Length: 527
Image 1 (cartoon, helix red, strand yellow):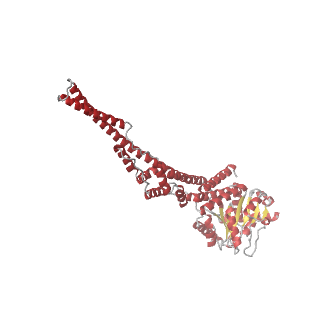
Image 2 (tube, rainbow, N blue to C red):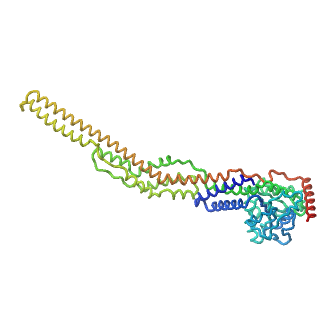
Image 3 (tube, rainbow, N blue to C red):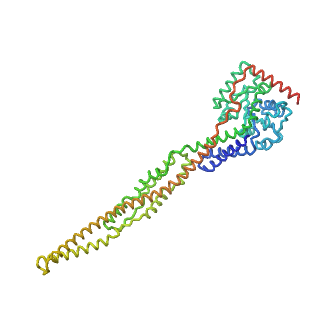
């Protein structure tokens, strides 16, 4: 396989593994197991290399798998007989001297393996190099252990050749138990209709069309169907061509790995749907007012302003309303987790502060807000100066008045000067009093706004730290998992191995049968 292709598959596998690790327990158990199995399987397959193409012949009792295996390999190695089931263990024929580690991984017993000789291929030597052909036990075997072998091996093969016969090709056990489970893997699947020599020529096309219809009903579209006869050799040459094409491409194994990654990525994407647009600032702004209202901050700010104006004592902030805080938290989680699956919603709820923790944090933050109610810095000085001016003005006014009334004997114009000066001082005292009141009211308004602003900022900081940052972290991890799942599915799905095919005509079938017979004769001569 192309080294760059191998590197791409490894990168996609590692992306999937990192996504799985990042998602952790937030995935449902079935999805996590499916993704984990895909990662482990593809890693093993890549470590073994994809220079080998594993092809499995699967089918039911009496379908002729073993006979077809022998016909394709031009050997008489697979068990063929009248006793059912005949195939009890996996049989393998490899066109490679280095397939043993791969066969160990698949689980083929040593005594059930044979290495194909290039001498048997004649002029076609090397066309099937790297092929590992498996003959699986019957999927409908009366022995449960045989079915278990089939179920274990099927996910490990690169190209699956389902062998069916005219009598049982519509068997529900085959379609519901196996074929429908292959939806999405059409690029690594071929269906062979064996024993067509038992069907009249006039009915063969109808038989193939009916089989294709059943496959389409299973969700398997454009799967290549080839009629063959393992007994006469009819169509076997075409099956070998398909296998040779697989070996020539050397990408069937990669295609299977890519398909497994694609399916696992799709399962992961189903657990990480696209995010609902969510912005931290907007989310905080939506809940800031309700939480501030729950603290009574505005009322306390007004009390601070009144205390500054009227020289009251310092007010205290009450504890935030428990129900209001809990409701704000619930609204937050509902909005932030609107697009999340249950596991991610639980993670979000666990990451965010509880209602009691949020209430305690808001209370602690508001205790740091300065509730100072002292007046303007020069208020006392102005007050004292005003009182001095008032007292002195009154004294001077009285003395000047007495002088002007000749009660006191003072030289003119001192009586008038004293009276005027006293009046001016009284007016000055009044002006100072007004200035003092204006300054106190101005500071009262400023302190009221400062308390409100500091309090809102404190509440906002708590919402960001206790709700916003945990939410951003969970949603960020959710987004990373989704992006990695998307990157796993980045490559387009593989096209069917055989491409677009039409059914062969009667003349082509006859020609194929003749060619296969000639090849069989040559093989027999060599043997």
